[in-house]
Length: 611
Figure 1: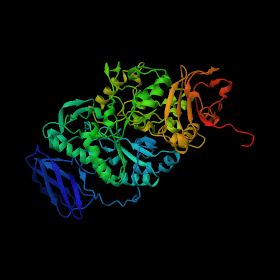
Figure 2: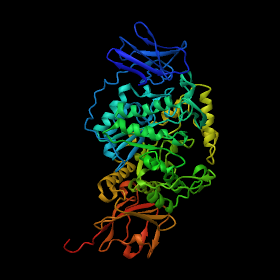
Figure 3: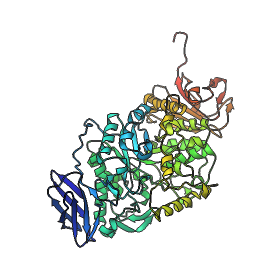
C-alpha cells in the first residue's frame, strides 16, 4: 500500500520514486525523525518508523528536496505543505446494515461541498441530508474533493488524489457525511478525475517523469496509462478508486471526461478500476458512471462483450435539446439540436441522440448504438458545467419561462432515464453557479484568459461580463441561499410532487420495463406512454409550443386501453406550482393540449352509478 500506513505506534511508508537516488522520510514532532527508505524494486522505496502517532506531519526527502507524499491521506496545509499521518481505522462506522445502491429508481443530486451550504463543509452538508431524503433524492453526487490548491476550487484541479480537501473539514469529515447519508437511506457517489492532474501543487514529476505521457488533454498533460513504466501509475490509480470505495464506504464513482483517459492497453484502465472498485465494495453494490463526450455507448457493455463494465453515462443530448427548447438559442455546441418533440421522444426511447451519425459541430460522426436500456443514461436540465457555461452562471429558470421549465422538469423526473438535479435547482435558487479556482499568478491570469476564450463560442458574450474565476466573489456568489427554500416555494412543490409520483406510482416507477413508447403530436408537442399489464397505462403529454386544439389526432398511442378513458393524474399548470390551473378536456370533445404544459394521464375505467 502506498503512502503512510499507521499500525499502533508504527508507521509504514511506501512511495514510488524511480527518479530519485536517495529517499528519506522526515516525521515532525518534538524532534524530527529522519529515516532512510530502502529500495524495494521497480522504483519503490519503503521503511517502517517506530514511535509515531496520528496527527504528526511528514515529508519525503528526495535527493535533498523535501516534498509532500503524493499518496497522502490528508494535507492539512494544502498540497504544498507537509502530509499528515492518519489513523484510517479510528472512525466508528454505524452503517453495518447498508447494502449499497443500484440504478433502479435512482434520483441523483449533484452538489459542490464548498457552495452547497454557507459553511461549505462536510458537516454542514450532512445537515441537509434529511431534507434531500424528504425531497426524494436517493443518491448525492459530490463534485471532486481531492486536495487542490487555494481556498476555493471546483475540484477538477486535484493533485493529492487520496486526500479529501482540508477546506471541507477533517479527514474523518467525509466518513461522517457518508455515514449520515446512509442513515437517511441516501447513497454517496464521488466525482473523480483520472484524466489529468491539476497544474498547481503537483509534485509528481519530482518522483517520476513517467506519471505523464506524450499526449495532452484540454486541461494539461495526459497521464501515462500505456507507456513505459505505466504499470506503477495504473496501480496507483486503481488503488485510489478502491480506497474511496473501501475506506470511505462510498457507493460509486463518476469518472470525469473518460475520453481523455488515453489507454491502448489490452485491458483499459477504466475497466480495471471499475472491477477493482466493485471488489472493494463487496458485498455492497455500487454504481460506476462516466462522462464521455463522444458518447462511446459500448463502454456500458460488460468486459466480456467488449465494453468497460460501466453502469451509466451522462447524457448531454437530453440537456442540449432541453436548453434549445427552453431558450430558442442554438449557438456553440447547441448548434446541432432543435429542441424538437422528436428529440425528447428519441432520448426517452433510445437514450443518446447521436449514435454514430455525422455531427456537424465537430465535423465528424459522434456516438455509438446504445444497445442497453435508456435508463442507463443520466439525464439533466442543469449540472455544474452547463450552468457555469455562461459569464453570469445563470440557471435555466432564469433563462426561460416558468411554464416551460415546469413542463421540462416533468419530462426529466417522470421519464425513463435516470434523472439528476443540480443543487438548488429544485427551489429555483437565485444564486448563480460560476467557475471559480483560487490560483496564484501567473496561473490565475492564464485560467481567466482560458475561460474567456472558451466562452467566446457563445453569441453575444462580452469579455467585460466575465467574472474572474480567481476572485473570491465568484465563489461566494455561488453559495446557495437556503432562505429561499421553504414550503411556499412553488418550484420546490413541483419537484417534491413529481419525485413522489416517480417513486410511488407503480407504472412510472418501473421506468418502462413493462413497455414504453412515444410519439410526436405536433410542432411542439409529444407524448410518452407507459404500458401496464392490468390496463392502467400512463401517458405524459408535453406541449412546449402554443395551445394545440384538434378534433382528432391520428396517433395510435393516444388510444386508451379497451374499456378505459384517459383521466388527469397531474398537471404542470396546477396553481400549486404557480400555473394558471390544471387544464384537461375529455378527448371525446376534441383534443386540447395547453401550451407550455405537461399533463400526466392515467387510463381509468369510467365511473358508473354504483362505483
